Image 1 (tube, rainbow, N blue to C red):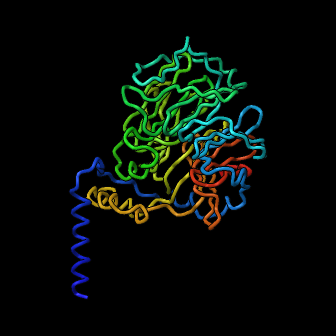
Image 2: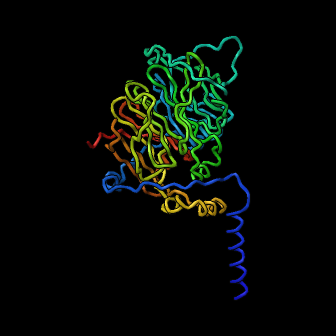
Image 3: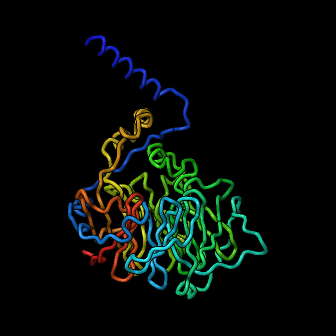
Amino acid sequence: MKKLLVLIVVLVVAFIVYALFWPTDFAPQSWTPTSQAPAAQDAYADNQALADVEWLARGVANGPEDVAIDNQGRLYAGYDDGTIRRFDADGGNGTVFATTNGRPLGLAFGPSLPKPAGNDTTPEVDSADGSDGTSDGDQRQNAQTLFVADAKKGLLAIDDEGEIRILAAGANGTRFAFTDDVDVGDNGMVYFSDASSKYGQADYVTDILEHGGHGRLLQYNPQSGRTRVLLTGLQFANGVAVGPDDAYVLVNETGSYRVIRYWLTGDKAGQREIFIDDLPAFPDGISFNGDGTFWLALFGPRDPMLDFAADKPWLRRIIFRLPKALQPAPPHIGHVVGLDTEGEVIADLQDTSEDAFAPVTSAEQAGDMLYLGSLTAPGFARIPAPEPTQ
């Protein structure tokens, strides 16, 4: 028994030495998470408001991370097999609309794009700041261009026939490693996120664990074909949502449990500020319903071990070296919150049951229904959109 204990100690010490000193590109940065205020805890009190979701297209394919609705009420979802599938409004009659040969994540409809000049379909990588020209806002009403944030391919545009164009694969000399979400303003400008310029989708946990600020918020101008970097240094830039009157755009900093507001117009144009902080879980997708409510999908809740290790890079090196089965993982909980335009919580929907629709990675309102996507579930879901509590 004594020899066995000695062997175990030797192995543990050897593993720690390996974890701390073996060369790797993983470079964890020290940071300090903000603690949750009592008021925030009250806003996120346990409930089962998501327990009655209606599953749609269950078993068709896995991982419909986001859901988009076209002007005919048809539903679109992107799956982990690289397909984007189109469904009737009730989730039936699913067909493959397009195949990106990547991993389609965020989806958003916008105005029809100008045709590329000649045969030039080369995606932009090195780009100077483009002008902020706009297109006719009325075009959005009849838009049939589906913009796609594909984790592997970049920012894509798909027309009515399913033809795919790569609009941007990088910006300012840095290629995208993890194009994540996209939204389109009323003026036709496209806003999207590159979650990380260092780690791809398969290593998203590593990026969050490193906290190296590899995320960016970007703007694509359909008129000029230019991509402009709006924000850098984001901690896993995730969901994107354009606010009312195109005055600002929100981007989720998943790795910091918060949402950032970047002002597009007015006296604060070009400035950033915290929209909501101290979230109880990792913010994933976000959308605006056009009537004063942002729907925020939460992946989590937060892991106390990760918060404890935040200012201890040496500990996160050890966690990084652990087998994935032993690394911290969020429990199976469905969670969506509604926020007003000041970042206050006005709705909270949860489901902690074993058969919960989870993780919820996007929430998109169309009419009186709230459509939910999931990175790993075998279908998407919907539920009547609740009335705000405030």
